[in-house]
Length: 361
Ligand SMILES: *Cc1c(COP(=O)(O)O)cnc(C)c1O
Image 1 (cartoon, rainbow, N blue to C red):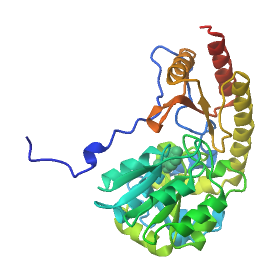
Image 2 (tube, rainbow, N blue to C red; image 1 turned 180 degrees about the vertical axis):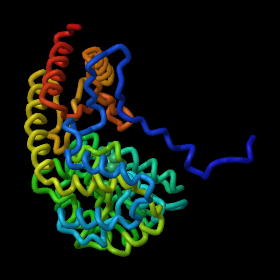
Image 3 (cartoon, helix red, strand yellow; image 1 turned 45 degrees about the vertical axis):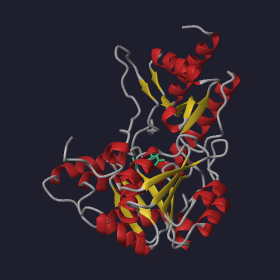
């Protein structure tokens, strides 16, 4: 018996399992487990970090005005309605801290991103898991689960780890029909991979109950620096700024993100390359009898006949120096999530899975 105990809910948090990055004894490892951009960040972002090294003794900006202005300019959004965080994970945490708590509910979906549940529990709230329909977010199921205790509803679009999307009309219907006290959070971590998609910005502009989150960790290739942002109704952003630490983003991170968000060509090129090789890999796997849903993101979710077969395929990939992601924790034990890497990485995945299919080692 101890008198020192954490708050209720904390011990229900399973530690986050990141994508693996090493295979002991294997050289030339290809890491396809964390949906990182294989081309890295835009060169201007790396250069901004080098320049920032000269003034590391200075505290960073606390209002992020320059980065918010750059984001606003690029996306056509009001900078006053933007908040920046240490990754979009931090924005998710702010939302839970500010709007959820003991006695309230936070809705996420069956295969939804792990941080929604973790942040809800960390805030003392009750996570509520809602079924999806064939790995696609089901708006009717969410509406059926919403109660007068619901404070937040998290939907990633495109979703991770499924890669599927909910339609704009469906999400508008969800926002329209949620209980008055609930906020719909549209997580646009992969929005840049969808040509012409605003990530939910229009809905977050028009409605007083929708917040959009975005990240520099995926197409901008800056996961190591931890930068994300949120956009939504002014009163909600003002609330989130009350719980935000004044120096939550480092000066190198702010400088890198500002340079990155201005490099629209980089995003355009990475999106095109990803789309091309995503289609190539999905087709190559389909020919091997390994299906996947049409992905809108920078990975595909390869489905096998059983959890045992997925585990065996994963082991075979590892023997060939390829690290994919098991997603049993996302209730998809028969699947592997494979990030779209460089062309050579995609070819190696297809070759390794062809060997696996033939039963060869
Ligand atoms: C990768 C990812 C994020 C981004 O997290 P950061 O904290 O910004 O690195 C957010 N949501 C989803 C669904 C993701 O897959």
